[in-house]
Length: 124
Image (cartoon, rainbow, N blue to C red):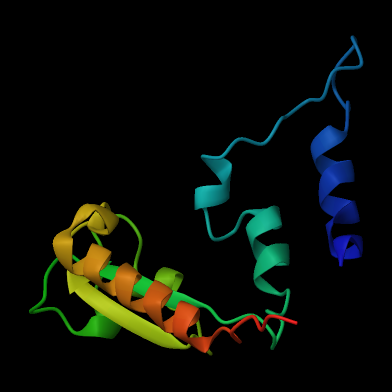
């Protein structure tokens, strides 16, 4: 799995142009916000295991905007949507939608669903 990241780490740790051997450029989390970022592009190609159930809770800043054109004010819908998610809930709100009552209620629903799906332990 990590093999796809080898070229990225070499490019990012290159000391080209530096006399002291220090990296010429060190990636930051801000760099990872760019869809053209090498790490983001490589990570986006990794498949999600079929044994992993995942859900999306997505903010939509302007409910009047068509969903595919919408955003949470920072991240566009297309950057939040995950194909294959067990569920996707779009909630009216901004980038901090996780702090809203509807998002918390949705998270509780997901957690209860997961608990209910567990196989009960049996006593021997």
